[in-house]
Image (cartoon, rainbow, N blue to C red; front, side):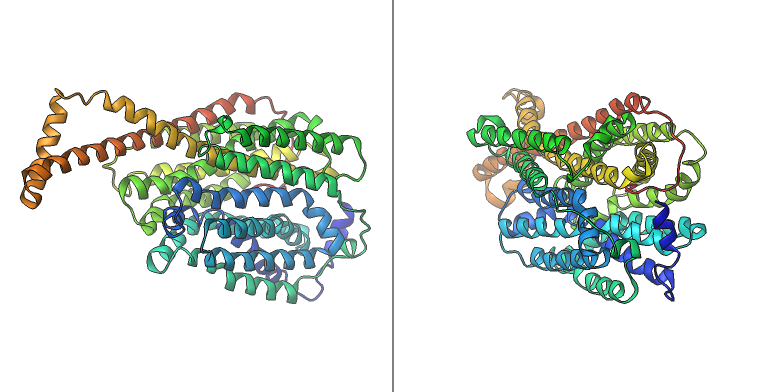
Length: 524
């Protein structure tokens, strides 16, 4: 907005804008890294807190849920309490919650801490971007946003690798404790160098739409609980899930009606009349599901199926971030020169192809066999995120971009939660189906079965005697059968992710071509 541009010329008089950049990039970096650092720790969290792996993945989905709920209200909190004060408060909440995540001694405790942490982290990225934009003169904003973008794409590189190293060398708890010194440093720098611009200080805001906020929180909360508990409780076979689903639908429908019929609402849903915005939200929902699904199950595959340590699992998937770093400057140049729809559709095709490659992996691969697919998938992520946010939000009037950015990121986070729940359900359900199918091939007269039993019996006989060795051989064949069934359930997940990406390609071309106005919020 023009008044923001005018104000930004003297927002921080006498302060080096690069000090401000460091101050606001730190919390954004901390928030992004926390979406991936816990992924490699899931088996260790599950073992430490006496829960299953699918229950431990709630550590990821609960974070995304509370993060999503706060996003639409972040603009109101910034104007009501001051952007600097709200940013510092968010960092303090995030940092304290990180401590309780690390100190948790039960699944319930860590989930409550992750909910709080997600609430604190929800506004860190959009507020940091806004401060960074206003702290630099127009001719240097591109360079400043490049620094912000670099921090955002480096975080997914360091997240799994750092989380794995900390888990192996110390404990999974240090994957959360590491946020404490970063948070303290960020609070110090922001307190010292960041000042609210006049239009923030003089802003007059109405009351928070507590009705809309409450309906959204309850509706999304029930959605997340159903997604997380559905597999364990047989989905709609459970009475409480059926009732929870009804209440969820009522809350979300009432929220939509309230936002369309009342004044001073939490969000402006009329922007969904814009075709680009609606289609863009659908696409980022689908891509969020695929991306977060991959981020969740790839480290699990390496640890559960190939016995990698957390450090090696994180290292194996880290090339994804390298691809994003390579793509970032290239996409920044191309986004204003070629049709963004071509870039987005290319990104979906490439990521879908990488998912198909992952579906063809075997249990005998080396750690570096998938390096190039990971690099290319990271490249494709940036091909989707930046151009899609440009074509989605670039079609909105300037005064609607902030509201649109909150809803757009909300859809991305909900998509991520849905994706994580789907891949976990597929692994559990399809493992049972594949085990049944594979067992049909193991009839008593099967040559392969007899050869395997004889092989294992020969291995165990010197240690336990012929009779016990036969029993151990049968048990060993059963374990291998379960392992193969689990492997094929991972393959199914990768194929579904590929299918979801390919289905999105024709939808991309229903978007109207828009002229880029430069970087917009919501690129990540």
